[in-house]
Image (cartoon, rainbow, N blue to C red; front, side, top):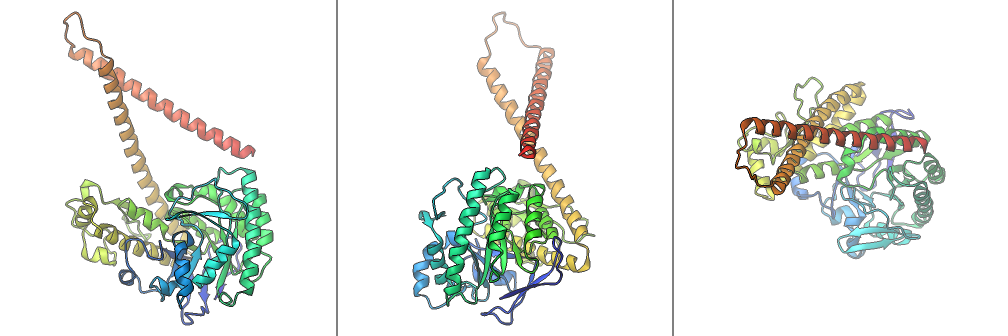
Length: 468
């Protein structure tokens, strides 16, 4: 497998092509693109047969080792590769270490090995065991083992240790790769660890980029995976990602994984990232939401996503997204899907997955089109405005819910602490109005104090970061 790019800009949006794939010689894949997120080798909620109704295009399937570790014994006796084993032989297989949609527990550090939190419990895996699994799976491409247990709050010592471990794993894995006959045609990708420490990143780059056999690089250690990644600000990522990209070989494939929202994806594409995954679609489906953000700059639709559990969609007979050509939007209404997710029918997540994956793949098609036409900034502006408007609505709703809960708690507290009147006098309307006004003032003051506390905490954290 080979990767080529159409320009050699250091840090900017670019189009690339994966081609000359040994098992699929007639297949070529354009980047930027998103790999299909799988669990146990299957796209969550849908079968391979159903997925063929979603997309007829060639795809890369992301196979996290953490969810397929128990396949190794069966794969040793199986004649084919991992893509054939999971029933998706028409796709390119890519083995990764951790699951981007599942929170990776931090703090479990061991010498010369990392923990995998499998369904059977914690499994400690070193470079030798990892390469045993890779040789058994025989993937078209795979990432080398790394210590990715870092995030924006990690200490300098932790990031330094992560880099030391990653470099050690890199050397052992590459030595095994170069001797392996099974993996001689597999596309191997190194991992750049080091959290948000520039020095640690540089040390890792200097060690990992010295081998020309490596076809690409994963920028890892930015988070601990899971749904929380969706809300991580692009402003936190951009400085360190830009620094790493500027020091990587320009002709190599660049990847970042995680449940990034489309706004962050666009920011990373603008920096020159080529490869992502569809784990974001999975976490959306798990909360019964459907993507509806517009892919047309001229479109007046400003709705970013729908939460189909909400009662307002019970009698809504429109498709999820007008004009969408996916199977879900072609045959089913919002009201029907609302019913399915409300009564927890298995068909509900299936239909949402079909739509979300279809829309997300179309999103990347649009990104490539905009890069060709030089209109990526306009698409970014459109989607960012939709996303920000949606987040503002969510914030307002959450604020109302919090204030309502606070009022209820205070009312319950007042009732329990109330002493009986001894003068047989009744509460007048004027007294009730005064009490209500005083209560509302207390709520406002309490909310303002909470806001000030949050702001001061944020300022203090920012100052600490800037000093460090």
